[in-house]
Length: 437
Ligand code: SF4
Image 1: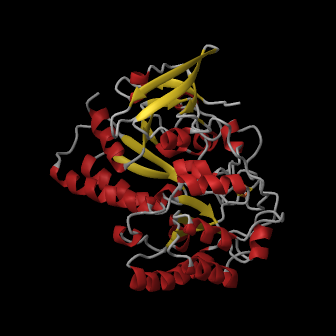
Image 2: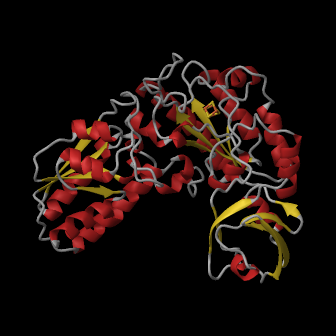
Image 3: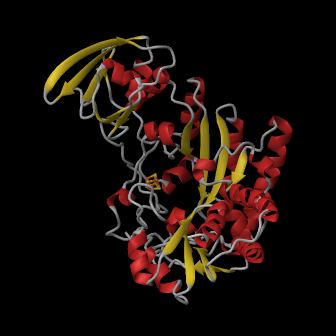
């Protein structure tokens, strides 16, 4: 029996409204095909003549209409996957989700491994849970690109890295995707002693040999919290430098042969190694941006644009005496330059506060995983200092930090209003905007 998708909203100008759909309806099938998710709707609902079966308050309706070419359906579903999320059957020793403490918001403990989400939103999947019906669907709908966590191409190493259960050969799976016309953005999470060194060399060489299918490979250092049960080694600064040197050889070769660099080290590797991130051109259009690769370069380039604009803007009459820009340990050195330039322009004292992650452990240094508790503990300062927090530490849905704090909770605990910024432009806006309050 079809489950269908529950409609949260139906946009005014969309085809769904013209067809007669309403918020609260459950769209069961389109053109005779039961809907498993929004991908099915896009695929089977692409025809000009459309029939649909709907459950409205327990009553079955049959609708029909003509869709203009290119007209969007204009539907907002409660969930994009109507038949539920495919969760992960692996037991990776480095799994970040398993390395989180209990009691966090439920969405953080979901270990998804659903190729449909990989297609829809760029999440990484291992392909270990595909059955023949999934392959048939991939062939029929050609869901491309997919984002695949490879970790290692050596079958026994990959099996160990994914928890030890029997798994299909990843190179054969990638080649099969290629035959279906599906391309892949891959990642390798580097776990020192497990898949670096010779294993990594083989992995990159194997993926390079599949480069018609594998468009890019991100090299990501393993992120270890203090709750991780398995004893794993972190990527050190020295290893980060080795990995960058290794990647640089491949990147040169790939650029010469294909005009693109193929292998893209994660921003954290540059920060760990103390090396500058490459210029924008070296990211070849940022194929791994959803994986965070290139965010630092984008941030720095956005700042360079703002900096040029500042030179043309008059110093604001700011009422703020002092500003504290809060960030994680990794980004703090890069923010120091920005803080001094803002200070010189605005006349407001601007300092950077690097908050250590006591909640997850000191190896977690990114701003996106900062917690409210750590900020309250470490960002206390004079009451006339405006505290500016990075927007990435709040989740998009509920505006809460990893440990559940909202902006107002933090303001209460810190005893003052706080501001939230995602970009250097936001900080400038805060300096200027606050000056005119
Ligand atoms: S594939 Fe591995 S790392 Fe990813 S969710 Fe599953 S167990 Fe965790």
